[in-house]
Amino acid sequence: MVLLDGKIAAASVKEELKHITEALLEAGKPLPHLVAILIGNNGASETYVASKVKNCEETGFRSTLIRFEEDTAEETVLNKIAELNNDEDVDGILVQLPLPQHISEQKIIESIDPSKDVDGFHPSNVGKLVQGLPTFVPATPYGVLLLLAHFNIVTNGKHAVVIGRSNIVGRPMSILLSSNIPQGNCTVTICHSHTTNLTEICLQADIIVAALGKPAFVTPNMVKDGAVVIDVGITRVTDATAKKGFRIKGDVDFESVAPKCSAITPVPGGVGLMTIAGLLKNTLQAYTNNRG
Ligand code: NAD
Image (tube, rainbow, N blue to C red; front, side):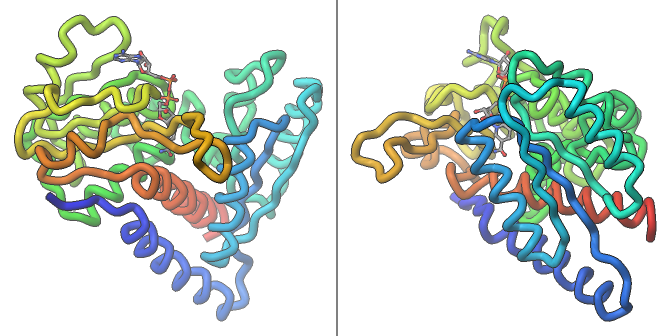
């Protein structure tokens, strides 16, 4: 069984990016600049944004974190995004989700200039993705593709089952795996909360991507021998024995499923790290498109 270690694969992507930023610096060119907007005090969001900023530093990207209070008016955020859209020194803009309830996620996503939409959530970028045109691939599915590539996992002609149909993970993942790209060309089944025969479908899968947000949901009776299992799930599960009072759990019951797999991702240390690698690659792409 191969452990699809996100630390190793992400380090390799970051190394490649670092060489590029070093070359830019030597040439006296500006460095790629990512701006992250964080609204409110969601603990998980704070951790994700801090990690994005830290990874920018490690790879030589510039980053700016803009924080707004939980009760900030939607218009204030929209005005800031408009300002960043017009700022030539900003390459990528991301607004950390989820947002406070009074702010429309869709409005925020659509307000970001598609050429700076490094999360790849803008409808015009999603449309391009569906049509197989160059675009920003949403960071998490992008990270999964980078992970598959790093470990030379063959996807061509395989049956992939994606559990979850969200706009940020499951749906773009299903489209990418079915696309005519190096880590694609799968026959894809996309499952969701209304799927009735999930176990039966999963048992047919050569590749399972679990992205539903239910800890240890995928159990050995759902996995055929030799399957590749990609666990996207990240859930904080209360644990009084843990230092922070919680542990991060994936959607796959790793201990019992791993022995059946030809390859599997750990949680933590798997897809989460690759998501940041995907985001950084998108930021560099935005930089190259806009001022390269
Ligand atoms: P979401 O809640 O938006 O979507 C969950 C999806 O799972 C839905 O489409 C739903 O139909 C499906 N689902 C729910 N219960 C199901 C069931 N019993 N059977 C089949 N399908 C079911 O979640 P999301 O934003 O897509 O995130 C999914 C998980 O991935 C979460 O744990 C989230 O924290 C994690 N996540 C991880 C990363 C990362 O970097 N690793 C990034 C984004 C999200």
